Image (cartoon, rainbow, N blue to C red; front, side):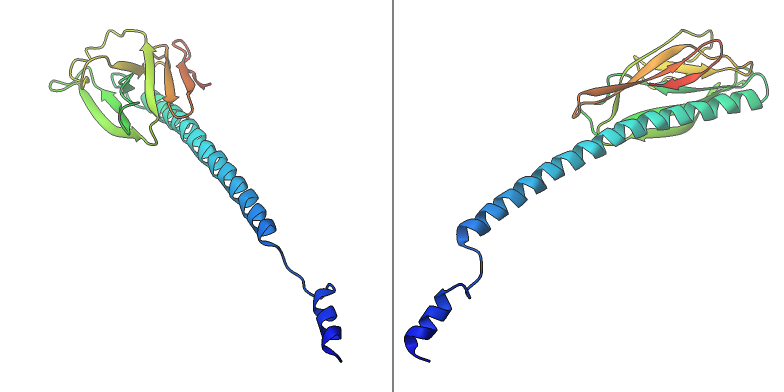
Length: 184
């Protein structure tokens, strides 16, 4: 073979590959897709954290509701919320309570303190007033209490959970007469 024949063979299509422009365009498109996927995944996880917080509150309320019906009459179970204590802090705490009106000492006992993660907070809580003396149940001002009674009733009201990164809110309502808990 002559040198001109081998030269023709090298340039006549036997060389395959991508040009630098093609590689750069493919990398740019891949980075755009990865960025969009990361934002969608982050939004999904933040949304799930808000829905998980709502489910956690509803589950705790249902558990306390069942416990108040199954325990002896004078015991009352409830939850203490402090609205508006979250967007500037990383977490918001709320507590499960047991109230014994026949107790000679402290009538209120904190059963469990819970914490919301990922910046979920209680933006509003409004429950009907109760005749219980909740002064030793309080940990600060502006708190709202939902109580479940042995006869199957509760203090009616609602609770709003917020996630500032999503600008989204979810509600939990309690019916007074039936003590039904609805997560909306």
